[in-house]
Picture: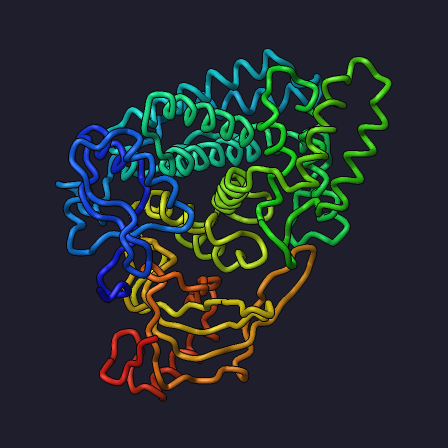
Length: 492
């Protein structure tokens, strides 16, 4: 078997697993990426048999492309629905409740009564969303709903972030049994609660209302996660996991290396120790002190929910970009998708990006893809010495909004970086472009390729660079690489 050509990666979606469980089947043989069989197809499969699939989720498990119709009969992988999933009345009620709460806690402490009201609102929206038969493929029409809600900026961002985070979490769920379903709901509710409360620290701060923030203004804003945390840490009604996500919701980048997480670990540990010592003799703050000790331990051993933190962080970025701010109008959803990708290198791990674009990328944009065949992209990869390489590619094949498409390499290039409180790729050095005439093909979706897309070269966002690159590609290859003659293509 030529594994690179014959195998397709299995997508662990809840509806497919539910189909297996309800019909008590494993309908196909499953393989590793090299073609070695791992799980045999089986009729009358037990729940334990099916659950074994989950063990391979992180490393990936594959099936024959020719057997895709057996995975879930009657449904094509590219199907989308235009059913609007976001309930206007329930969502408007949540936004109004959020607006009232944010005003209330400017003067009075957050309390258990607040938490119970938030829980009711969250539960009603979650159950309504999950009840739709088109829950996995319908439109997450939160921008449309909020455009007529007439809510303040802080309430609109909070509500958008919570709904987008919910959609990501629900669509990524894999439940096999009733116990699994109950556990998944608990995790979904906790994530939504953390999303709701993540930015309440702003109510205790004087936030600038202009763009182009100075470094000291940005550093001041970076205090809000720990302020939000201190507002929830002493509440017995909130689970430890909710408090942890609130504390760490701007720390989505997992692993070593330069990143835009804040607070950075050393600074966060110092602040937590400060508050632990400050309140250790205050019996009214005993719950807070106990939780600070737990959070300190978890931060030091890196025992935090990176997946949930990533969800809230990227959902929050989308929510903020698409909401009108005092210094700019709202950004269109498709443009927001591009900006998130282009600012992702120091912000998110690839799993966070992949989950975002796979699970809600289309449905937040009226099923319009933000990335298409023919687009130019930059991919990054790292060698064993941790040196990073940047390549320009054209997209040859793409499934929906996947950021793991088939690519054709054009050449290599060097990026330019900027740091105004956040490290970003600010552009690329045209003079550093080195064309690769081999035009190698990489299928990121089928192979365990270390490359990841980090930047979309867009004719509207980057017109000068786009025109220069497009002309260079046409001069060298005769036509735009992704739609031109491919007789000389070399595969690797």
